[in-house]
Length: 167
Image (cartoon, rainbow, N blue to C red; front, side, top):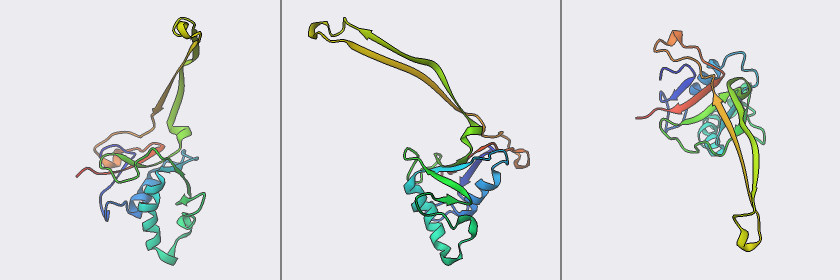
């Protein structure tokens, strides 16, 4: 709870859904240098949790969230990217939503170039060759802000994580 870029979905949540205030808090914490920020979440999570909040607004949608539906949904002006390997149901202590600029807060590295090896020994008895290809890559999400028990001293990074609090 002391991570500057973490927003816990607990206060005011109904039926385990984040409130629009929770989502707005994520937007508020996003620093200005995260210029290419996007929302990352499972499609079912978006329509089952965020969509129900937007439906409750009825015809009173404010401009920043009115384009939330369609092929290219947006939420508070940021595009929504559906990531099918993120949780689609509310799981305690598991990141459910990410708002961030991956170009500013992550690094992807090639730890070792791709290699291909061939062996004529392995399948000798069937007159075949065996091929083996390997590669090593590394990924690091490094810009999550600082960790400080004093809320006024917390400085969020370019990756804001929304998660449900464990009960």
